[in-house]
Image 1 (tube, one colour):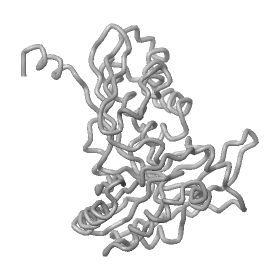
Image 2: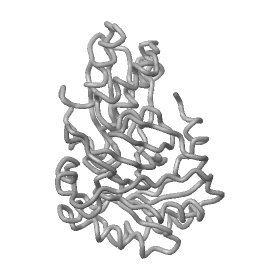
Image 3: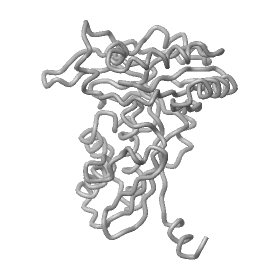
Image 4: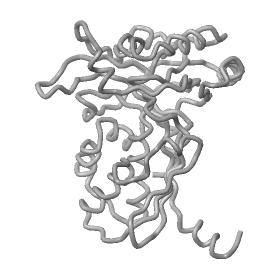
Length: 304
């Protein structure tokens, strides 16, 4: 590595944008403005995108990674919108060279864009040495998107309202998951528009699950209310759910968010790894990734 390259790397600040997973998602109502009200338990997986920032005169964004070609790098990109909003809110006049390494599928129900925006906010706060009040940051995050506040918090959370009501769940035990996307992008607004029927009740639990099977038992009493409408728009989701459910050790298979990414939950890391290998071998066109579920303790160890 040359001297100039080493110096640039030394000044670069990198933050992980982990995949957001809805362990359950109940649609509990709808506001007068059309936004749906949710009750969900959100966790993060030990796999995600990277957002790196470095000093620069102007704000620029470059996108690379396996899914980079599918992500626009223009002013509409949520990472750039987050950067501009933070600079405006804090009065920062400096720029930044931002690099997004896109490893997560796009339009996939795992909060990729929202997680990227949250990671950019964290990295830029460190680069620009600013620390907005938590309330101001929460308002800024919500203005960017409903999932950005929980991604900014970066911890397991019960989420209500349209995403702004965030509450800590009881401590969650270690568990492992396999994330699978069939290569189908779905539109969140279309999924909500296709949803029919009565609203669900919230179904939060307060007792800490003592181990992974206890957590899985609590989650089995819940569901994802967007699965049925998602299946009408992306039938391949049914194939993914069946492939996950068929693997030894899979305690629960469910769609995350508005899809099309689904997950299987496992008590043991080896079971998750074996399941991911088998599914990837059978469906080479799918995106398949085993990952630990990041508990609050694991998330606390990540850079702020």
